[in-house]
Image (cartoon, rainbow, N blue to C red):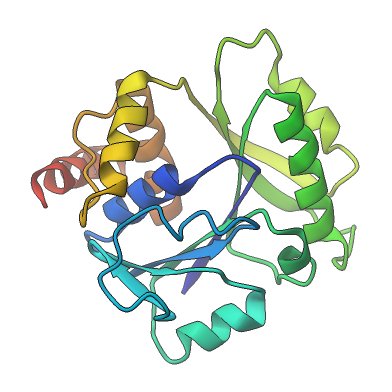
Length: 227
């Protein structure tokens, strides 16, 4: 079971649903909502009862309102997942969260986002040995800022982080429209997404699942055709 921790103060529901959709073609995937404001509660139509611990959405599962790591383990119980995508920004939940297999910081250059991200990551590292360096990817939502990655890195330079690959995404009106359409649908459609968003999704999913770019193109086409 591979646990991917996606940290950051941005709304990542669409990003993570798209990742889960692509991964679920060949993997059993769970999305875990560890966000302070329970972002996933109304991000998709419910099929099971509202209070079901795990909801099925499209070809993957969603565990909402996860309070901490032990709560997630209880919800999973004996279910075997290949990949768990953990969307986390809840400070209290993160303090004792164990080490994961992959780390991704999802951020923009907005100062409130950068400052909040610093608090989130500080809380995650609070009970961990500072001598153990963890490798992080970045997904940056670029929106015409003149700032550079140095601004983000300097806000976190006191933490034991080694920065790995960076993926840059330029927000597009088409992507926002598709996000909203998907919130009302029982399936997650990736059709019509902008080229930069498709590129970021293909690269990050390929990296996590160790899938070659040529194979990712095939998976993308298969996913586009599926309902």
